[in-house]
Length: 201
Ligand code: ADP
Ligand code: MG
Image (cartoon, rainbow, N blue to C red):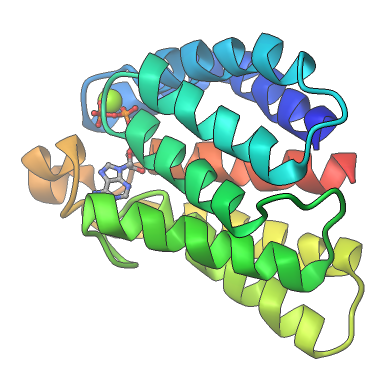
């Protein structure tokens, strides 16, 4: 889990300028800066946690994001990681069902804080379809890696979908219909996290 989180942090840092550019097109151009700042602060904290349970790692990740990232995505992702951490409390290993419980809790946290549903051009438009695809694949008997592959595909399709809809939550909603045609930065960063999860399990 430490390696996965570090890979997510590295990817966010690598895509920082692109994420900021996406945010600049429809809002205030800080998503990449916000996310990189938060995830770069996460790295030394989790590196110092070798041997700790997975729940604690995710909780520390979430608390660090909430405390270091301004804007809405930091607290939203932070809450997501904290809720996932609570769902995996004391676990030194996790299986598919644990992962499902963790992401269910993460989505619940994002919705509790942000009050968005699917179709509002947010990170949920990547995360929710990805999670549904993951659950469907596990139910169909696929292994975690294959199911995560399906999740990544669904997240990528979700990012494409965000180009077709208008934002009704967050700063991008201020420009209404003019947000159509642009991909959502938060859906994009969420997809990078899924991609790095898959690449590093
Ligand atoms: P801010 O909008 O405060 O500048 P960021 O630029 O870091 O924060 O993050 C913007 C992203 O946050 C959006 O692209 C969107 O995916 C996500 N977002 C904004 N509001 C919500 C919400 N209410 N629920 C879920 N995600 C949201
Ligand atoms: Mg922004």
